[in-house]
Every structure is written in structure tokens, then in C-alpha cells.
Image (cartoon, rainbow, N blue to C red):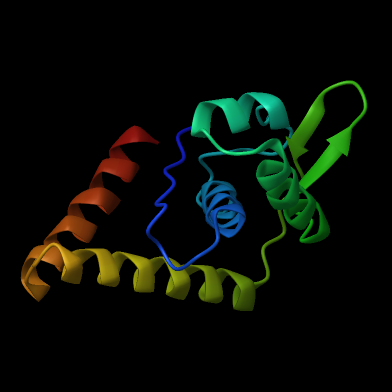
Length: 126
């Protein structure tokens, strides 16, 4: 599982983790029953405090994206994505992308081409 944390982003780190894992589940890159890294391991991998990852996992559990399993740890829950939640997640991801594209000076056509390429790559990987 590849997550990227942007320390300069206005979004708190725990929220970045939560949003990215939610997105991975929504896009099918993380599937029902799939194990997530332990809190300790993900904190180590990302270079953040265990409490930060714990807060993200707790929010994901409240949102029914993941569930805690005594034997397996944290696993992806059965996915029944509400269309409104999906639309909100997509809008948030698009806004983050638009900000990043603007910050690096990408034109609108360059940004749209990057999105198109990413979608095509995702289709190819499935």
C-alpha cells in the first residue's frame, strides 16, 4: 500500500491517511478482507506518530471502511459505497489534484492529460 504524506498540505496528516485509504478502497485497489499494515508499521513507513495512524484507522472504522479483526488486525470492510460519499471523495481528490497542478504551474490541458493518463494506467493494471 503506497500512501504519500504532504507535510505542507492544509489537511492534517491523519486526514490524508484516511482519505487515501478510503480512495484505495473505493477504487478497488484495496479489496474486502485485505489486511492493512499494523499501526506501528504504517507509522514507521510514513515517518509519523503511531497516534496519527491510530486516529486515521479509528475514523476509517467509524466510516465502515475498515474493521478491526482480533486475529488479522485491521482489514477492509465489506464495501457498500454510498453514491453521495463517493461523489464527495471524488470532489476532495479533484480539489487536491487541482491545487497541486496549480502549484507546479501546470496548464489546464496538462492537468487533464495527467488525469486521463492516470485513469488509463489504472484500467491497464486491473
